[in-house]
Length: 86
Image (cartoon, rainbow, N blue to C red; front, side, top):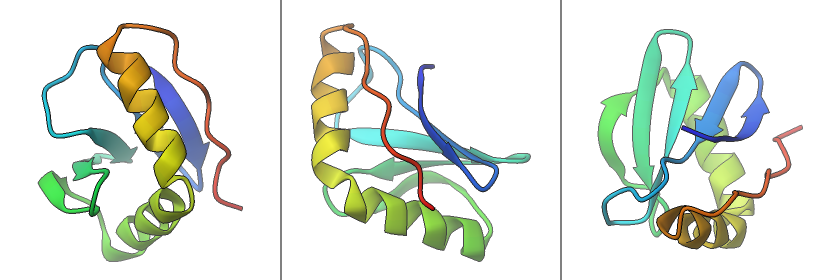
């Protein structure tokens, strides 16, 4: 699963040729979550509230880039790194 960003101990990644809807994965320690790009709905998993807030804040800033990486991942092309939350 290619990593596209990392910040505050949170790793953001996407699978190549993954199923719809467009989404990304976030890991924080032993927690993991799958989040829909369109509206940031949780598809599965759990993160602590503070980590989830940081992930949603980051995703909102980089929504367009997430959709671009999703299209690349569908075509099994290299993904672009996305700026971390600072």
